[in-house]
Image (spheres, rainbow, N blue to C red):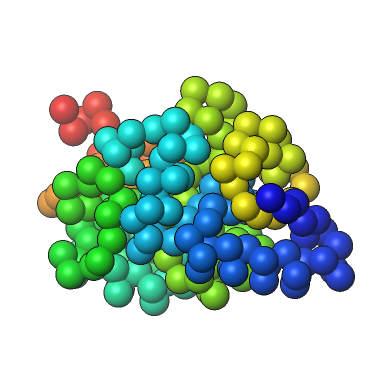
Length: 217
């Protein structure tokens, strides 16, 4: 288990390299995002996903979202991307928007009980993007035990997750602990599942047909 300080120029490159190596080996890492710190694993290594869920104290019914390092990566994960999802991505990526889409059935991964869907986001944090651009898609969830407060630093995450994680990337306190907003784009009408950093009103400026969870019932 190693904790790196990414605020130090001389340590940042070594930190990212260590995180990339750990992910490729199937180990877990903690890294900063533009919302909360995340615990991540290679999205295509089933044993790594199991380790992530175990570290958080979750079951397969709570599959982790997937983070990507570029918008182009999304096209490789889906069979077809609805125009509403494409508009939202164009407006809010990188940033605090997670979209739920149907993933390509040919993908060799097992994120848990997803019923053929995946929640995807491109974060706006330079350290996270550096890692993701080397590793490819990563399954990433908030870096805390289920039921505990989200970690605002890598050190906080280390206190909760300990040796379950191989590499911790410290980049200072999170500026905003508000999670990303989640929009389900799998149906005819987009549905805001969680209003986080982006409000329903803000999302409707891009896709006016988006409805809230109450309207979807």
